[in-house]
Image 1 (tube, helix red, strand yellow):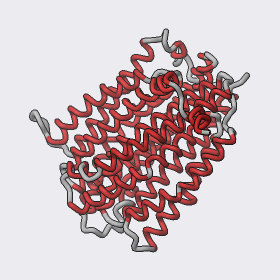
Image 2 (cartoon, rainbow, N blue to C red):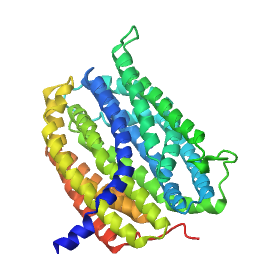
Image 3 (tube, helix red, strand yellow):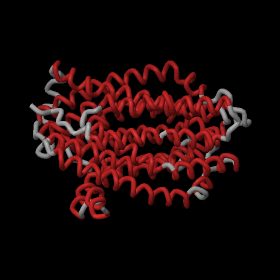
Image 4 (spheres, one colour):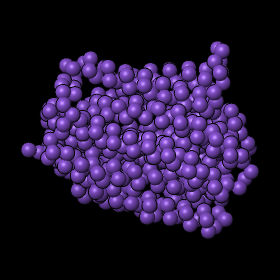
Length: 464
């Protein structure tokens, strides 16, 4: 019995070497990106609570856009991975061009929305706050930060088009190197512009935004120039802009698979924003504390996020090559590996929880809330790892309708109602509300386990 379990869930040295070769560069790149965000957050947090809260609210809103981009590109990305498995460069060109148009539409829509309704959206998180924080100041800082951050959306758009394609074709090192370049730029500019060093003006939150925008353009430039400069490694890039037309039948095919992912990411991210809004009615200190907790949590989340990307890339290529038995076996082992890694990560988070909030110049109340959130996030991290891996398993086989129901429908039909009712109709502390929302996700864990075990995702969607 023990031997069969070991064989099913534990791989050999070659297996882990293969998985880590894909996942580690993604972990490093995401880790670097989140580390920049962490330093950014700490620097702003040392200016004041209202500045930190304004920035946190805007970043929550921008996260909806970021995930819309990920979702909009992911549908075509499923085909990219499988086209790569078939060595079909023309197919990859079609997916790239589709990604360009999808990202352009989403970015234009986001800029228009945030320019016209940005203040109202920020204000949603400041209504009902009753702990004495300066809400007008938080709104002011948030608006200033948003105006600058909008300038970086075109760079983010192009970066994701290229990076997603490179990763789906097995190239994960170059995006990592570009991320390192972005870190160096962002870190230096943060220090200079937030605090006004070397004779530069102290711009506070605006300085943080300027540094982030410039670093994004640097990162995009590195990735784009490398991709076009190494055509022998990226043969699909030859003639990529000769035309931006995508065959009509492929547009329909990509859209049918991708629309549920786009809608899913839009609804899921807006659901997460709504959850934060529910928590925010307990006061400005909750927004600040949750922001601190999310900053360190994002650093640790890179482990299961990268392993989820590994599922999408490795399993997608195996399915495209028609290796169904190998895909199932590999998937079981990656899921087990992800959960095991995150148990270790969660233990580390528990030790860090009381220390990290001390880096911020804020109140004791905010620090206490932050510690509580970090501990709760640590407890539920293995659960999050399992859900993330099962989600990408289902998505790799093109089961986008299922993932839509599994993810965003669940958030809006279960998680948000639970948070909304508990925050408005009870006097429960915010950390108890947060825990109840996480416990509700046990339903998703059971559904994901059943669907993966049944193998409904084992299909080749690019078979000719």
